Length: 157
Image (cartoon, rainbow, N blue to C red):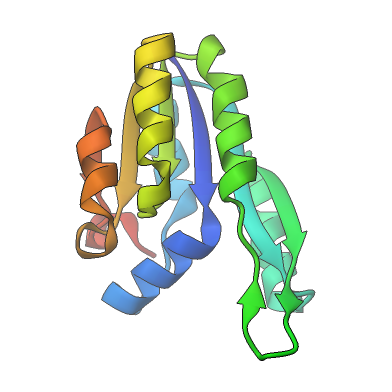
């Protein structure tokens, strides 16, 4: 069985599915689908910790499914803007996992990851699968992937 590593940009998936469908992504269904096709070597979910109880329950559910949940504190700037970005952390973990798996699976619509996917495909001969909401996923990310899977109603709760 082929090995895969999963990387979930939780905030991106949350906001794109909520904006497009008014619903949440079904992580259990996703896990089952991937586990039927691959041995899951690594599975990371990257989130921002605001410290609220609902979020803690969600993070606990992700852990129960099998994800290693990585958290960064939510930072509110003096000007009212917020900071909480996992792009560098996701990139480092993808680069560390790619030599050991056949497939990298990224759940995100963020075009900043396009060069990363091109690199792991070229350097490690990894397949790069992207799950994202089509109308909110950067074309550059779709084009850089080996396979793009549109998150539609069948992937939602």
